[in-house]
Image (cartoon, rainbow, N blue to C red; front, side, top):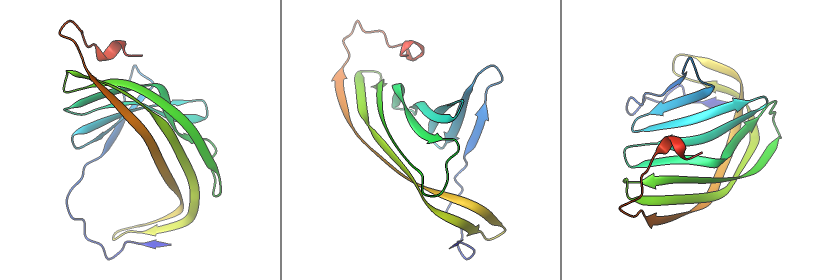
Length: 145
């Protein structure tokens, strides 16, 4: 059991998730960053993100979860991506993700209790390589796939 009943929020941190009506892409918006996900059959994948400085498109998406996923389950996958930083630096990234369902219980909040909660311990490790784009390079985020 996780008891957060006595905690006071430090600041408002709005998070919004939505799916465009004509798309299978789920978008998660936090302050200063937007994540793009896709759910295909039994797998949730992170396919990219963007913020004021960076645009990243995963050519080999980050697998975050498979369904069903229960206490004791684990997942190990690899990812690759390309993008741009500050409109002048090309970025290539690759790495691995480890997801472990390592706890199960309830969360007590100041105004509510949520039962049947599965904690996912996620470790993402990788490397980023950056290079300066030439003056003739045209960056089009929609054509990174």
